[in-house]
Image (cartoon, rainbow, N blue to C red; front, side, top):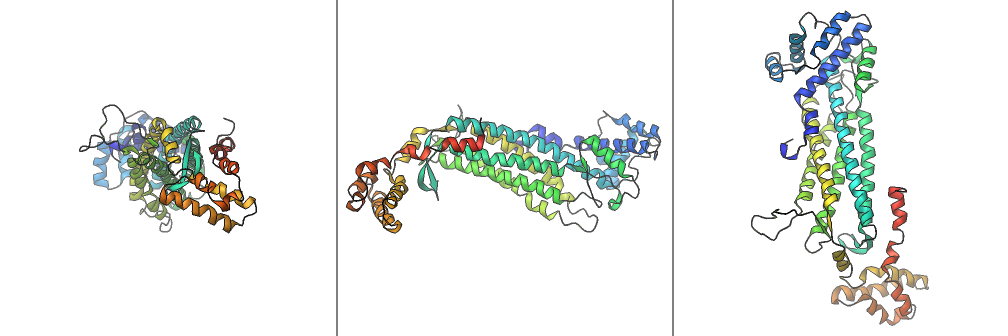
Amino acid sequence: MIPRYSRPDMVAIWAPETKFRIWFEIEAHACDAQAELGVIPKENAEAVWKADGVDFDVARIDEIEAVTRHDVIAFLTHLSEIVGADEARFVHQGMTSSDVLDTTFNIQLVRAADILIADLEGLLAALKRRAYEHKDTVRIGRSHGIHAEPTTMGLTFARFYAEMHRNLQRMRTARAEVATGAISGAVGTFANIDPRVEEHVCEKLGLEPEPISTQVIPRDRHAAFFATLGVIASSIENLATEVRHMQRTEVLEAEEFFSAGQKGSSAMPHKRNPVLTENLTGLARLVRMAVIPAMENVALWHERDISHSSVERNIGPDATVTLDFALARLATVVDKLVVYPEHMLQNMHKFKGLVMSQRVLLALTQKGVSREGAYTMVQRNAMKVWEEGRDFQTELENDADVTAVLSKDEIAEKFDLGYHTKHVDTIFARVFGDA
């Protein structure tokens, strides 16, 4: 996580000040519940709230931790300095450090998910707008990087919209799955704390009580969360790769917006490079880097170990901050993408009708020619286009075997671009509904 690829709202979730504020709220709400149950005096629970609104001294907590070698104890010591040692003596009653750490981590992930959900919604809005803008903008579809059959730029945007909409659903599911809290004490048995404390704290903090938590919240939840981030990152790379291909000089069907005063190369003044989408490809790799460690965190010893802790201290901030930045950048790329319909048509006709070969093949079979025979007839004319630059329609019209089956008018009809776009509205209705 570096400032270059960070946005302030997501960074703030992982700031020490935010973490300690959440720790305090967990402890204070737990004290309230304990007081309601008659476990601790009500005045002591009320006294803890004196720290509400106080800026916890991060440097002081670090100073204490340097001696205690325990972050939660260091925080509790600092809290007692604020509210008074006697008043704070019931804080953390019956709790263990993981109750605070795990519940806090999940709160942070939920807040991060809310930002990522908003990011995805913004990206979806941009994709939808561009899809409708170019619904009927014809371009060549490619398989294996080779011209295949006509499609439209609108369908290109629409398929990325559908993919990102699935990611939005995944992100909402991941948020729900990780929105649990645990205040169950050592090894998760509630031996020293009533389950009603957990219920109270979770209700106050917008979480669901973890059904069974040992001494930690099960890490399969987090594995699913970070796997979702990895899938979203892969979808970002998928879209970015398409833009990078379209911006290649030999293709130039679209390009990233090039602002006034922007420079593409320190050596070559003519350059306009796809730097944003190349950057997004790299950022996607960083987000996916968190997935395997999150998976490996699932297997912990017995009721608890801390092999997951150092991993999560890194991947929590790094993956969410990076993905937030990437989604915001991608939304801008889509929103400002410069599209060149005329270049799309030029590329479409580069091989003089060759991309209509399947229609001719199907027409021949419908007239009684075997599929193998029809394929041979069409392919031999197609190869003349590839190898000699000839016109595909003309070659078909001069092929006696073809014209013995299809008239010139029937051949010509197979070169109508509108044939390939006749179901665009149907696909759009599937993707966007009635919008």
